[in-house]
Length: 455
Image 1 (cartoon, helix red, strand yellow):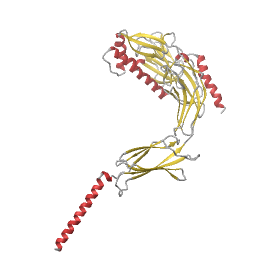
Image 2 (cartoon, helix red, strand yellow):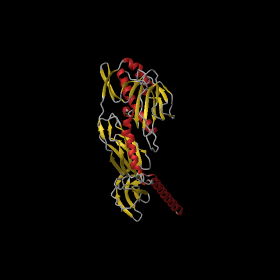
Image 3 (cartoon, helix red, strand yellow):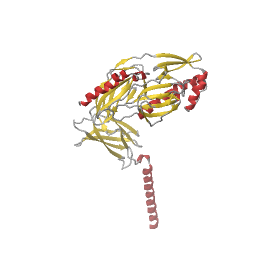
Image 4 (spheres, one colour):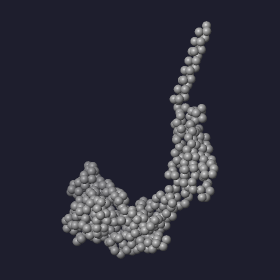
């Protein structure tokens, strides 16, 4: 009898033990008892202006149950938000604003406490407490225009000298119509900068040029650069494209640029004239911006650029070309340089010293050299037959750099000469004019220098 009673007791104990183990296994592996703490992310670089909303992301696999947000100004912890969500949402995005700090407070600590919907931890859930230290900056950057050119012509250039400063400065530049960005180069001493800017010829309407400065807390200052504008006479050309041109020029240029050849002549020409041209223009801008010197400058020692010796001009800047094939208009494009022709394989001499930043084959431009002269100003030499200098070389005024040729999307031997302002092709005629360079560029820099030296 006693033995039977002991057996029943043992069975009961084993059963209870199995149930306990089973319950433990269930709790351990059940999604309702997940054990991972919620994650907390704050989109910040460590600075805040107290005006912009802070984006907070909460995440948990069992959903968010509640959260609290405090901030500490170094003296006390102040509750900002305390919400019970009881949400099954695994991702919750919040925006925080409305914190009022006394003047002079330069730092605060944001404390975010989150609890999830898990039944783990005796049904209390998993909890995360995360602290974020923020520098408080409510002051906008200083952004003043010191001097600038009186006017700018469509397709042309202008100089701007500015003062920009902020203890947490993050980004600053000149914008044209909010479409083109021109970098600022340190000028004379700390907090002063210069840029040569351009009115790209493909932008029809002039809106405004702005100096923009932004600090790490996203405080922004926008200052207008006052410029009068001048229009540019546009010459229109109608050009007939032959089957011979497509066979002898368009197809080889596309092949040498590693591009597929379309099935019909119209598509072949459009691909060469539009897609490849766009790729080449983007490459020029990329190379120019990546390799332009950004060292502090004092003077722009630039002389007027000279035309190819003993040459005739066959095309000018800002010609609007309409292309026809089989008497149908198939495309159009800007011609953004000067085309000069002399004898075959005529020597090309550089007008200003500089550094070669590109020497390679470039699609429709053929064998191309780009030379950086400082201040974001560069010159371009296209369709050449042979380079006499190469990328990385410093070259001096009067040095022979290449020979003319017919590489790229052309038939005849000539030089396509271009002037670039931070990768944008501008009117070379301005930069070939001694008086224009003096009144529009160097005089502006000299006047600005007098102002800066008095500060």
